[in-house]
Each structure stands twice: as C-alpha cells, then as structure tokens.
Length: 519
Image (tube, rainbow, N blue to C red; front, top):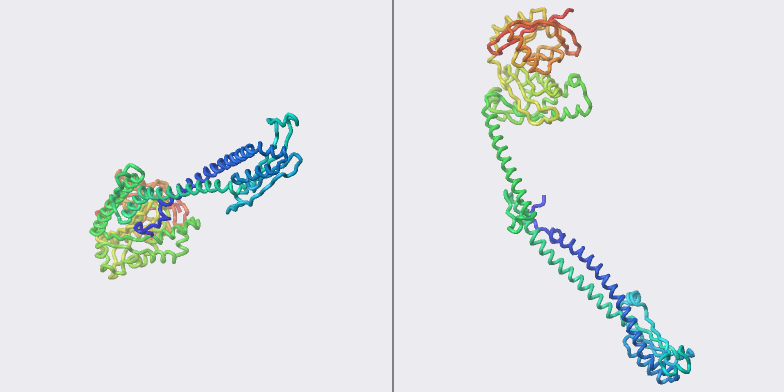
C-alpha cells in the first residue's frame, strides 16, 4: 500500500496531467491554425512577387523598346544592368525582334539552409518576361499596331525571396510554441493550486486517520467540498456503527461470560466446507453417505475448533482455563460423538432452524451427566461460520434411579411399541425395545429427537405437531386412530396409535403413545 504522505513526482501529479492534456490540445490547434496562416501568407507572398516583378518589367519597357527597335546595344546593356540592380534578379536578357540576344547578364544564386523547402514553396527559380510592343509609340504608325520590337526577360532568385518569408514563418511557429509552453507552466501552477494541493492535503489527512476533512474556503462549494462532505458523512456513519458494534460485542461478551448456562463458540468452517463439497457433487442421500463413510464424521468432529467457552463451561466440565480438553468436542461427546455429528449434519442438510438433543456428556475427571445440547442453525443459503453451542445440565431434573426403575421395567415389558413425548417441543423422552424393533431405530437415536421422525410428514412443522398434541391433552380425553408411520429404511406402514396424557413435575405435560400394527 502506498502512503498518501509520499511525495508524488511532478510528471505523475494530477496538475501535470491536466496541463499536459490542455497544452497538447492547444498545441495541436495552434499548429493547425499557424499552418493555415502560413499557407495563406505563402499565397499572398507569391501573388505579391508576381505583381512586383511585373511592375519592374513594365518600368523598363520603354527603354528596352527603344534599344530593341533601334538595335542599340549600349542602351540594351544599360537596361540589363538596371534590371540586375533590382532585388533578387539574378539574370536579365534583352532580345530583339529577330530573336537575337542583344544583352544578357547573370549573377550567382544566393545560398540557403533549406533549399528543399524553398523549392517546394517557391520553386527553384521564377521567370518573368514581357513583350516590347510599340502600340502607344510614334513608330507604331509606320510599322503597324501589333509590331513587337523584342522581348525582355528576367530570372528571380527564390532563395533570396524565401528567406524573409521563412524567417517570418519561423517566428510565427516559434512564438506559438513559446506561447503554449508558457500556457503549460501557468496551467500547471493553477491546477496545482486549485486541485492538486487541496487533494494532497485531504489525502494526507485521510492517511493520518482524520475523522473530518476541512477543504479550503474557496473549495467548499465545488467538487472538492462535496468530496469532503461525503467523506465526513461516511466517516461519521462508520464511527457510529463501530461504536454500536463495540457496545453490542461488549454486551454479548458480558452475557456470554456471566451466563449460568454452558456456552461454546465453535468454528463451523469445516462443516461448511463439507456441505459445499457434497452439494457440488450433487449428493442426494446424505444419511446413506455418512453411514458409508464414518471416518468423514470422525475427521469432521476433530476438525471443529472451539474458539471460546464461558466460565460456566469450565465449572460444568471441571476444567481449568486454557485446558486442551475443551478445545474440541470429541472429549465431551466421547463414544456418542459420531452419532451426534451425523444427526447434526442431517439437521443442517434439511435446513432445520436449530439442532437440539438430549445426551450424556463427559467431564474432564471422567464423570458423566445428562444434558440438553442445542445450537441455532443459519437459514437456507447462509454460510456456516461461528455458532454458539449451549449445554444445559438436566441431571438434577432426573428422577432417582430407584423411583424410575419400576416404570422403566414396566414400559420395557410391554409387547406394544410405546414412547413418551414431551409436549412443549414434541421431543421423545423414552422408548421401549418393541418400538426400537418396529421402527428400526435405536433408543440412542430416538431420545431427544422430534416425534415427526417416526411419522410420515403430513403436518407443516414441529410447532404444528406440538399444538395438535396439546389440543388433544387439553380436551382431557385420550385419542386413538390410524397413523401413517415411517421406518428408518424409508418404508411406510399404518399403525393404530393410542395417546394418553400425563403431567410430570420436571418435564410438564407429556403424551404416552402406543403403536400396534395389524401384523
């Protein structure tokens, strides 16, 4: 990352780039208009040269006519000498009516540094000539009105003519370039003062962590002022949000640390990775996949890391702060770990809102206790990240072993399949061996699970089932009838179900269900 306080080279600054673009456009336009001006001056210069030397020949026509008509060689020589005295004339010739050269004199061409340019603009040399006619002279009466006594011709040195024009054109271009250079310097300075310097000051303030920007007074109503205002509003909103998040985090941390319930913060990234890979493979039956790949469940349980636990967790599991025993779930779940992880993956795959299970957990000193493990699950489509696991110790709620042994023996001795369901959440509390055989589920699999696991799902959700059973109990009478049930392997069968009510001091309203099939 490049710090805003680093010096920026002049050629990389915004002011230089803006000035360079403006000067480039100005230079292009200036050269274009200068070229048009030079072309216009060239045409005017050529026309002026033609007119000048046409007048020069006209001034010598009378003398030349007299020399040619009288065949006066001395006079012809004076005419030629006079023509050579004119600027840029390097050759003059006087020819009589018979075509004989009466006088001709030449001078060397002048030198120029740009002969090719002169030849392109004016030509290598320019020739001018005029007939020496005597239409307005007395001699024309005897010889006729169309009598031509001779011809007068001159050659003009274009090098001498072009030097002044080229100097003038060079001045036009030179002053144009100088004007653009001065304009570039002025624009660079103005852009730097008006744009670059305020921007660099704002960038240094942002890099220093300023919460507000104060643009110069002259920029408060322009784009720089709007930029500073937008930054100030965004910063204020960010600071307010950060403070709210910090306050909420502190509040959550305080609730987390002071809670009497054991709470764990787990990193479920490995679970999310496994879910995404299975979805990418197009897996349909995840339960069969997990049963066929038990090692994946074990690896997943070991991969889930514990980010944090509260003080109640340390007390419940007899562990010291920083103990490695609480860094994974494999220790507290012990032999039930693979079964619990498989059920958790099924709950995530089915997009359930939460996972809840009653199970036996192990403390660090090898003691066991019964607890309810629950954690909320994200909605469908959301990623699994950090989740909060809650553990409620219910060992104190359990009845003494002596008091519970007789009802358990009676329930296990029944030939009919039977189970006890808590109405508050429709979770199964107890099953007998006949029900395990009927539904092909073990007791460890069924206890703590919703009742809908045993029935064909005709109701909308568990809450609907709970309300239905509650209505039956509130009617103060039993219920019996035929129900479509479902075994573990997915096969459906019809069973006659009888429901009776019971109220327990610790568990509240209960429903006792017995199942009997025709077979």
